[in-house]
Image (cartoon, rainbow, N blue to C red; front, side, top):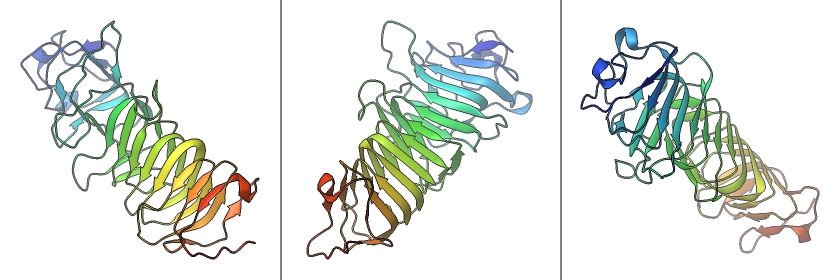
Length: 302
């Protein structure tokens, strides 16, 4: 188990020894480090080099392109660390780190500290990730796409967590593609979009837009969050202590149980949103919540 560094090279094939500083390919259990080089890598590990690596690290000083414009580079890395900056200056970072981590059989974590401000491809994210359940994702800052390369792309993650470093809303921007499967999404910051159906969403800060057709079992909104549920799928339960606005999409949809807590703002159009159960004021009274239910509505107080 060694630390193998990417060399400054005109070669782009992972499987060529010349692309590595030690002149030898990484092997199983190694930590692979990309830092302080502009080397592009567009060919994934193959043959006897297609093994499980302990870690894959991209410092912010790495400004090459990793992976293809529409296909992630297949690397079986357990831990992935992207965008940490160890120096006194602020490097631009890579405009494309496109990874396909499927095939890993050990639980690991992908941590994104920061990314480039722009992507190599228009209307894309500079960091794009695909996995198959063994990885959790933690995004502290930067622009990240989960299964957003092409229409129909799929991925699965154990958990997705989005936070911030300095600016609660602007530090992170995560796009969860429609083909993503994840049981638990937790957000404390960022300006993020979910296109997939997710079992449990907890948003306590930042801005979250939920689109597409997927269903949600549990949506918990904390006091610092602004959430826009626009997806057409049913939400089984909403517990709102923050700000929820469902008026931006006029597609009819259903909430089974809606709970409003003190200090919350809830905007729903009663002509569009169907509440299976009556609205619940949870541990609070009507004067402590803000409700917008549309024009000319009848409220049934239970």
